Image: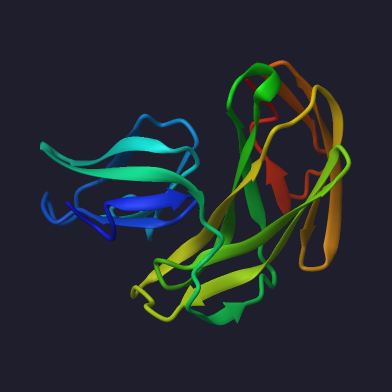
Amino acid sequence: MESSKSTASQAEPVLFKMNNGPVNGTVQWSVSPDKNVQINVEASEYSKEAAILFGSAGKYTVSATSGSVTATSFVTIDTAIYHGPKDTTVIMPLTNDSLVLRPSVFGSHDSSGLVISAITRNKYNCLNNFLISQVYTYGDDYTIVYSGVGMPENCQGGKAKAQTMNHIYPVKNGSHVLKIILEGVTYTGSFTKEGNKYTFKWPYDDNVVRISPLVIQ
């Protein structure tokens, strides 16, 4: 299996490509360990290419299985956090797009926080594109602004959904307001932390910005 790099930062897209297996066989991607990992398959279940984000430092094994053939690759994620490509030449707006946010727990108990993965509904040019975002902290409350899709100068051909990860750490026990801003529209909800358990209240059912799951620990 090919990979774009063997060492990367947290939330930095790493591209993987399966070079063998049946031409039209279904490809199943997996990562071990799988905590705080987001897999973005380029086109369909048959795609032999995937962009994967890792939300925690450590060593990971990436596997792709098609029929009786399994390919593996290894990647080490360091403690730095990726903030997007420095050679971005094009930024596309998120017009008529929507987001799915997936929270997961980072750390443990009183010192725990959140890794919030986000992925677009629409696909954009460059397999190594990047969903541009910024976290703002106001006391015990948080706002995440998603402002566009960055396309680096060394664009990897193809189209893929844009994705990113944001770290909110540490988080105090209690209730917190969470605002998501997409295309200038503010969506407001909240979450409560009790030890290592986080419960989200998200009063939207239009699927423009969706959070799932709503309870994690």
